[in-house]
Length: 387
Image 1 (tube, rainbow, N blue to C red):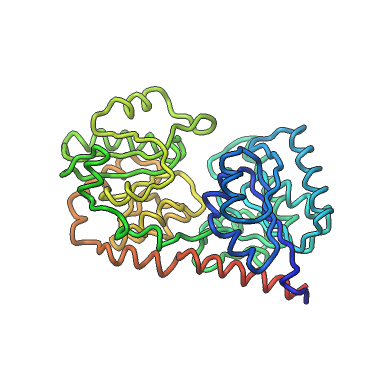
Image 2: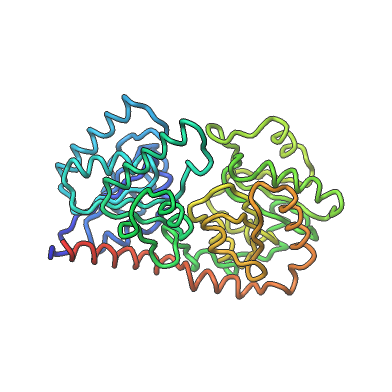
């Protein structure tokens, strides 16, 4: 067995915003027990924030999200050089492209423990040649890894059903999630009253407020949600839809008609992106995520921690966090009618049906961040002890 205080672990992600936002606090926690090195692209903003907050070594390797043969070979060579120089015991990757390149580099560098966390499955919404190309890349990533950790049970089932890896290689830790949610931060008691927050942001004091937080993109179900809300609002005048996020500029672009509706409808409020989204969870009455696909959605956990009931689609991750009538409403994906029906259900039946205390308690019990991070540390310990 190798002494854990000398173990070097390299974590890899394509973009620094992933490590800075999704993995917040995880690297610094693990660095108490191991020598953690983070590798990701350098955007100056998230890269520098990550380095300062987590207090770990952060190295820059530019990894393109899309297929770029020349750039991908250069990134692979840089990763191989780094791994051979650092000689880590563990390489642990996140995000598809970083997973493929770092698992290849770790395999060629003879790193004994090669972990890939699966946080989503883009090929779920692909078809034709692109589907098969991405499928090949995913299978290659899993083949080169020694351990696969899907962040949801549904994602694990999908991977196994597609014969992308073997059952003994794929594991879901605890109840799922990549980093859990910090319920000491996402706590409604820490914020001003709902009334004060609505006045601050120009939201109707008496309105029933639906909230969306995330990328304003097609695969998030934005088209269906906007279409449903416009129809719903005709007979439910005292209702508003608040969107926190920015329009997607690369993948999942919205058409001009939907963008025009979002920007012009008086009861749809596009407020932009915020580092601290807690005020919007607090001022809202219901969170909505009608996504086509997810890994394990952080926003749904955050909303639950803020005691907010949720409308989500019946997809992996979402349907593991939300149970009908208990902490929200699970609906058919890509259905305008299902979203409108859910809007009606929530506005007419929400009061008294779902206990805000129980909604929050469910998240604390299943997805508390410190418990998820501890489970990762214990898994590292186990894998290292078996070398």
